[in-house]
Length: 126
Image: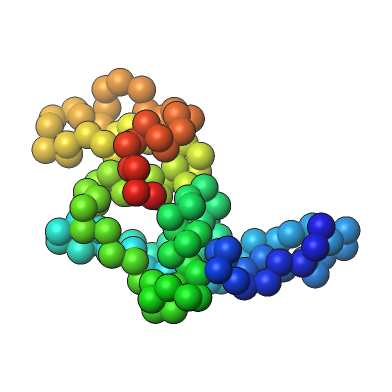
């Protein structure tokens, strides 16, 4: 495989290891400000861009978001984005993150995790 450098295609990948396997760059992060309250999520660009065409584009150097390393998503609920970020990192959909913490025993009943893809979350923008 050819070496991929930082471009409009997303986060940097390098191929300095034997066999020229692509290695993700886990040192680069970005901030995603979510919801009307602008809750801040710091995420690794390699992780957040892996499955999202939206974030791949947003990480591009030609976009303001890619240059400043900040994306604003006021129309996405913070609790829902938290579920997406957890899925992006672990490949598990933690259903307890979708429950209202004010409801007694909400975190102790029903299935805890699943491998349901993020499309289930209806995050059409990301």
